Image: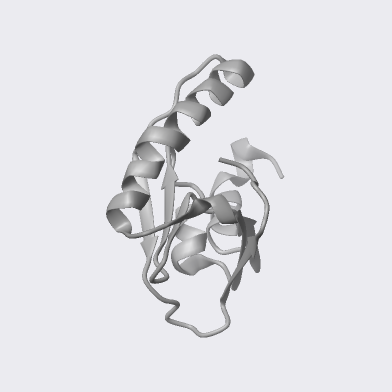
Amino acid sequence: MNRETQGREIRKLIAAPDFAAGSVHAVTEDGHVLIASATGSQLGPYASGAGRVIWVAGAQKIVKDLNDGFRRIQEHVVPLEEEHMQQLYKVGTAVNEMLIVNRATRPGRITLILVKAELGF
């Protein structure tokens, strides 16, 4: 698709795909899921736009509570993502937007696969 002439159609497809796949930054012991983002582009589909959402996360992302989740993002994820973005694009990162999922409003829409291995950061 041409971004110049079909920008609106591209945005609509991105906002409401049939499937969205990715990962999360923290999962609390009582089931909250936290996703931080610099641009927010993945948050709309995760929150409600995508028909189905599939997240795969390493078990190291399990934390006690929301406070530990926020701390994990600021103290662990952001520094690693900063280094990653500098290496790839020579730009920094920031937590500009965040999604916290407390529970799925449409049962079966979100699947979280926890892997007993360290995946991502």
